[in-house]
Length: 217
Image (tube, rainbow, N blue to C red; front, side, top):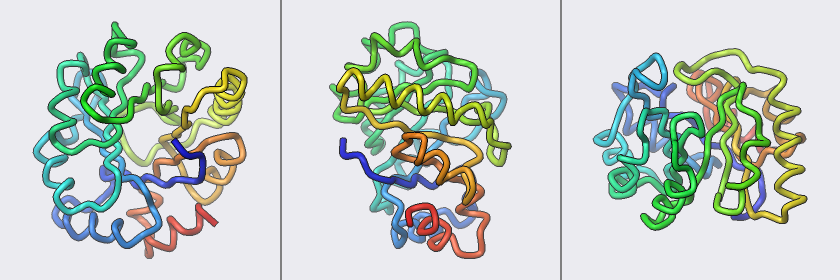
């Protein structure tokens, strides 16, 4: 996967009564991915949306659908999310017992494979799985809710992961999710992030397209 700055607006912060309008707005922006958080109320203390919403968004979105499963037993749903239109699929390290097998299943279903780490999970645990990944998603807030405050320690964590990827010669992108804004965004890109998930920063702004452009320029 090519390394350059990517913004992935998070649908969780969009206006759900006007979802098609919000997706079309992102179509007109410089964002390349659209981030969809799937929550089950068990792995995280919140329930968001599931397969029908992914299918519906897929019909109107021009962007790559970046689907993040914050659910128990995520491997059961890999094929279903591929069929629903996911282009990138990420599962939590903390929720998946057989990570290598799950990553193979994602790739076999035609998607890019990613592992997600909660804020307290060290990047060093990925040493043996990095060769089988397309991207790693680092949570810079505790998963489950939008609009949380950025955890500064994630900057050092991003740098450590970037070093691991370079030293191993792996073709793996680093994505960061949580508390991304006009201040933390440039800091994360400087630390080695390739893709940033931005929710309330994008959809809560007066001009979402300009907010996305600001992070990329």
